[in-house]
Length: 252
Length: 216
Image: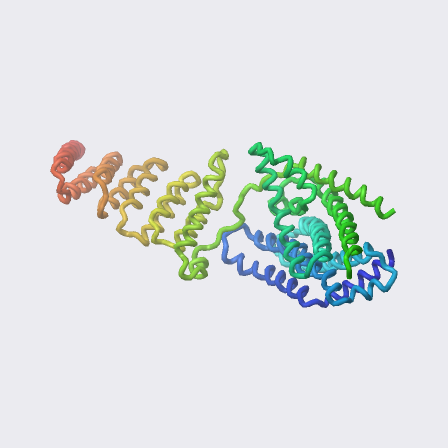
């Protein structure tokens, strides 16, 4: 386990210097700063724009890091042949995959924390809004873990571009699937049971999104706070197993 | 050993997904977070003002319709949406009319505000002052003010005969007989319809008799 963590720190250091990470960070900062202009240009409750931008920026990291960074990890290692270097050490395939996933998680964690602190400082003139940011950051971290697991899976079977695209598509499907499921249930469509079974496979990204509840201070089931991590970690374990199996069978 | 971890992981997915299905989430009170200010949108959309204004108008109508069956829904953003739509494209007269009609559900003063804004761009359109007059009479129970606005509408081209007739009726209700006669007389001398001339002449004579009775 210690070796896996050491390897993940090495991978993290490599990707933390990546230009794309700074691009995502600058984009989020721009998003946050644009709320000053947007606040002036729209009619709404004071501070609402800042709150929305704060929470959406956090989600942006949880989605953009898996799509643009994690999806490159394995496929880049294979393309650059640097995976041979790792394989020369006594690492199992699952350790390699886990180390990459952990590295992605470090990047997401650092980005979310630094962005969250900035967002908190910007909202401070309107109100002390700490707990909603913490709750959203916590859930977004697990959303990042879930999407990164999918990104790693795609990255171990296909090229960089295709895995980035697949990760984005799986996120889109996960975001809209619940609505489709609700509609099919309401309309009494016989496809509902088929969709429900597919629902166990497709990532349910909507549960990580409590933005309306946090912004409007609505009641929400507190069980989401422990169910979402269980879901995310369980899915990550299964996806790591599939990815390691695929990687072990690949002719590198 | 490693393979055994998969069993609780798969069970974890099934358990959490099943629980997610059970959780019922509250809907936010408003589907609209903010409304852009028309003056900024007008600059940003360049030559696509009409289409953006149509989108804003559609958004306003959907917003109204989506909450129509909710009891006493406050329609917090309805005026802002119509204001933005009519600022971006002030030449769409129907947008002002639609907005004014729908805003009566929220606050009739906002309807009047929107119609007065419309009058700045369409000073010769009789429907705007007529609608203001109607709001004063029907919602605010103020026939004196209603008469003034119907009077204004009766001086604009294209108005139907009921406009001066109602102006006169409301002036009479408010006890302003001279003003009531003036409105009817203005229509009487301008209309070429003989049937209408006869009707209005009768009304003028009736009001003149009443005025004489009151002044005695």
